[in-house]
Image (cartoon, rainbow, N blue to C red):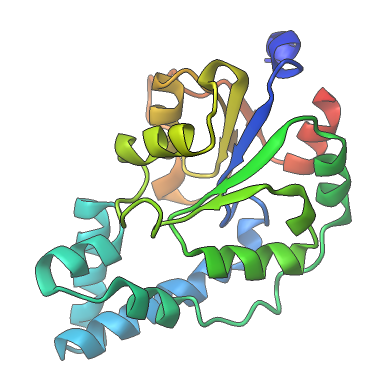
Length: 222
């Protein structure tokens, strides 16, 4: 697994997903977002919670995010949606000294690429105590509300930040979101999770590295 180390040392750009990647999924932060998405859908469409849940999940499967489905089918205002669903309690997110130290020693630029909003990303990074390490945030608004794993967003990130894919890595908890990065020539790191939806499929060859401990892994390669 670690025979890629000589190449890892040569990387000059690190692109990190945010949710369940820079903090552990065990904080259950996304559960709050998930619940608020359901509330938003129920209210917007005038349906009950059970029906809203079905709509929410079918849009997620079909369009990559519930928001995309709401925009395409119901002309939902994305700003209104994002503000509502990310109005959550970040009490479970605590400062991460190990990650802060690992990012400090990791050479190269660090960028956030998230299907969430920049505001949400900034709040979470502040709580983690790692904001100072990141030179840019590419959020769902920047991507024109087209979520990962749509390839267009990745190409835009590469262009926006003048990234040389052969010298860049992408770090994600959703295995499928690493496929376009790998196809574009980036090195990929999957942060393992128990979420069924985030698992690699049998025969997937687009994941270069896997870790259960992001801070530890980053420290080990420096």
